Length: 321
Image 1: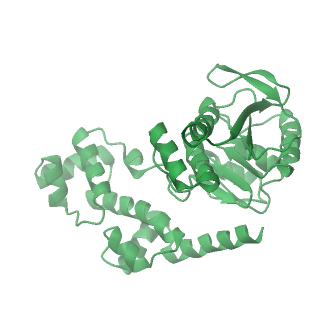
Image 2 (image 1 turned 180 degrees about the vertical axis):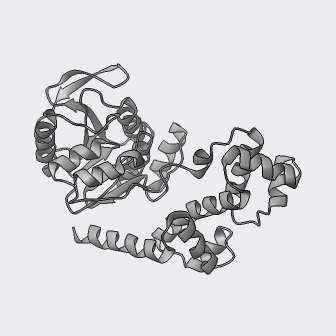
Image 3 (image 1 turned 30 degrees about the horizontal axis):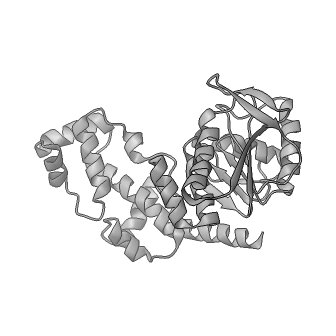
């Protein structure tokens, strides 16, 4: 079976949005004798310059059938008179393709084509509100790394395109192949679609190596008791020194930071729906499901029950399409 993959670019596109999925599909070909036939296309073909200035050779886009048709993003949401023509072409090609996907702000072009109407979609968190306001017929989930709604896939920025591609490879060729590709690319296998787009570790951005190491330790031991005394020991500081250094580096307390990390880790498990809330609470270091619920409300303003119901509605909608 020949799996033809077409990836659409346009002037000013983000190079990693293209190269990440290309490398993932290419590695699947090499490691598992997969049959992805890769083609980079543009509206008129020829050389197309990326946002970083590197030109890429492309084939002209024709309304042909792809197994996978993917639209990359740009540093800013695409705008201008050219968008309508590109969106119309995307709609024609998507109707003949098995699945259609976007990376980052490429979701704006899918939305302009009407393909996202009535669907759940993802884009870079910075532009999620703008996508929702511009195209109210779709529902944007700006927290997710990638989303699959029927035959339409969307992903967050840049490296999230690799996560989405790994999920496609897993769907096509199985988990072992996707895992082998992830290993070769030296990336995680695979960040789940429901994972936050940015980690609390990045959000805290501590300037101190000791505090950074402490946060990494906490994330790796969320199921354990993480008292201030234990964390201070990891940092090699007294409790008082640690408290001051932590607040200075992160702008919050150790307890609040650990709570955020636990909520971040528990959310995909909550949305997945295969474990009870008590099990999830225990795995992530909450005292019980009630305390976990309180933490979810403080950190993201929604209860685990609400998130699970929302995830089930999305699954039901996906199955109905």
